[in-house]
Image (cartoon, rainbow over all chains, first blue to last red; front, side):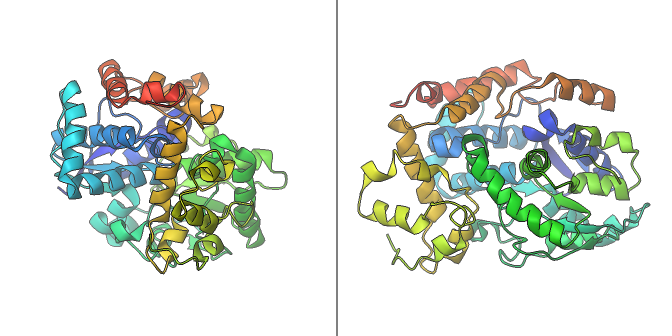
Length: 283
Length: 148
C-alpha cells in the first residue's frame, strides 16, 4: 500500500495550526505520495484524556477511524504523536484480541461500519524515513537550511517499543536524520528525550505542572542556543509554542517537521501558516 | 503483579522529578488494593503517559496501562476534574478535544484550505456517527458524573 495513505488530521493541527495540515499536504506532492481524504474522521481519540476516562469509548472511537481508512483500502497516516499513539495501540489490541474486535464491531455496526483489522497505523515521519527515504527527500531540498535545531521526539512516536519497534527509546536517530536531510544541524541537549509536559491530561488539568516540565526542556534548549525546536506532534508543538507566552525569557520558534520540510522544499511562506504560532517565528 | 519496588519508574518519571507524584507508590498501593487512597488522589493525574518507566522497568510491568485502568476506575467513581469534563463536552460537540476558534478558521480560508476541515468538524454525518459511538459506549453519561 505504499505511496497512498489516508490522511488523518486529528484535532490540534487543523483547528490550531493549519500550517501543519497544509505543509503536510504540499510536501508529499513532490515526493509522489497520494493523500486520501478521510471524510468524517473524528478525534483519534486523545490517549492522555479519553483513554484515561474510559477505555471502551477510546477503543471504539479509534476503531471507527481505522474502519473509515480501511474502507478506502489504505493505511492511515497521522501527523501527531498522540493520534499515532492512540490509533497504533488500539489497532494492536484489535488485531491481537478477537474478542475486543468483536465487541467494538457491535458498536460500529450501529453506524454502519465494521473494522476487519487489515490496515496499519503510520506516522508521517516514519513514512518519510522508511517508505520514501533520505535520497528522495534530499533531492527535493531546494532551499538548504543551516539552523541549529533542537529536535523534540515526544513520547508516543517511538514508545512504547514493545509494540512499535521503530527506533531505540533511549537513543533514537530517525528524527535527527530527517532534520539533517535539510542541511540543518540537530544539536544535542540535556534531557532531549524528556516529555514536553502536556500529555496524559496534565496540560488541561494542571497547567502549572505541565509548564514546569516544559520550562525544564526550554531551559536546556536555550543553554545550547537552539535556533528552533522541531517536533512531530501538534500537541507538543502547542505546548512549547504557548508555554513561551507564559514563561518569561524564552523565544525559540517551534516548527513541525512538515513545516521545516516546507521551508527546505521552497514552499511559499504563506503555505506554512506561521502566523498561527504564538511564539513569533522569525527566520 | 511483577513489581518488586525497585523504584526505576520513579527515577525515570519527568513529572515526579518536579512534583510529589511517585509512580512506585501508586503501583505499591495498587498491589495492596488500597483503592480509597489511589482513586480520589490528584497524584493519579500527574502522569503524562510518557512511557519512560515502562521502557525501563526491569520486570516489564505495563505501568502506563495500569495507570489508565486506575484512572478509568476513578472516573467511574465520579472523580473527574472540571477541566477534563470540558474536554468530554468538546468531544460531544465537535468530535475533537479542542473547540473551534473563529480566527483559526479565517486563517484556514486565507491559506486556501476549506474553512472547516473534512473531519467531524466539517462533516455532519461523521459528527452524528461519532456521537452515536460515544453514546453506545455510555461516554455521555460518564461525563455527567460517573457510574455509567
